[in-house]
Each structure stands twice: as C-alpha cells, then as structure tokens.
Amino acid sequence: MAQFTVVQEVQAPAGAVWATLVDWPRHGDWAPLTVVRTVPGPAEGLGAGFVARTGVGPLAFDDPMTVVAWQPPAGDEAGDRPGRCEVAKSGRVVHGRAWFAVTPLPGGRCRVVWFEDVTVSPRALTRWAGPVLSLAGRLGFAATLRALARDVERTAG
Image (cartoon, rainbow, N blue to C red; front, side, top):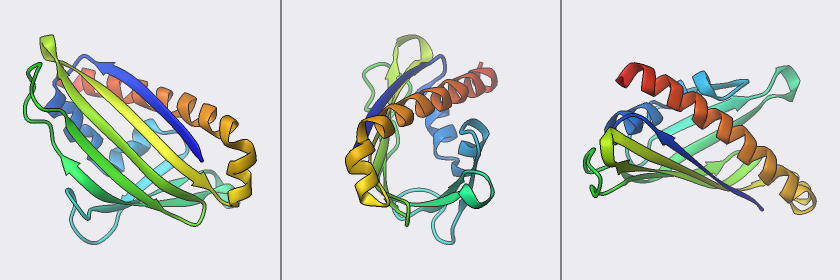
C-alpha cells in the first residue's frame, strides 16, 4: 500500500474551506492534469460519487470515489468540532481510501489534513514501488493543497 499525509494551514474559515473541498469538480482547478465530474446521485454527503480523470491521452485513468463518511465542521471557531470526509476509491487503477479533515483554528484560520491509503494496479507495482508512490502522492497533494489554500484565501479574504 501507498500511504501519505499532507497538512496545510489556510487563512480562511473552516466552513469556507470545507465548502470548497466538497465542490468536487473544483478539485481539477488545483490538481494538475485532473478533471473531476460528479455522477448521478446525491451531490454531497454520504453516497455522493465523483470520478477524477488524471493524466493525458492514453496515459489517463479514472479514479471513481464514493463518500463513505461525512461530517461538516461544526463552526469556524477554535474548539468547534472539525469536519471530516472519507471516500472509498474503487477504480481499476487506484483502490483504497482517502479522507480529509478541516479543523477550525484561532483567528478565522483552519488546518486541512489529507490522508490517502491506496493500492495501485497492478498490485505488485504498489508492493515494490510503495515508498516512491507515497512520496509522489505526498508531494503532489502538498502542491494541490497549497493551490487550494491560495484560491480559497483569495475568495474568502
């Protein structure tokens, strides 16, 4: 398995960051070479589904996901309950789970924690290349969360 965690502080309220993160098609605005589309069904909350298509031409792959846990943040003040969303990944290439949490901090800020625990097909690839995939995922998602932070800070500020 490839696992990684990325943490990003954002100079914006937890509610605004949560709303941006769960606007699934917007993920393509920050993740390079990625387009996200929703699938029929609920747009948010448990059971919401979406597909991230990542790559170029014949090297692109679909990463279908379904929300399996959903708890928006209880507020924007430090000490308010954090929000947490978890998805199950069920694609032919990427399988596993991912989640993010949005924790309110003092001064109208918040912290985003993003975690992935995935296997890439062929599964032998993950077994042998797990550390490299974890590093690549951590670096890629760190850049994605920095782009998200810049975006939401511009619009919320």
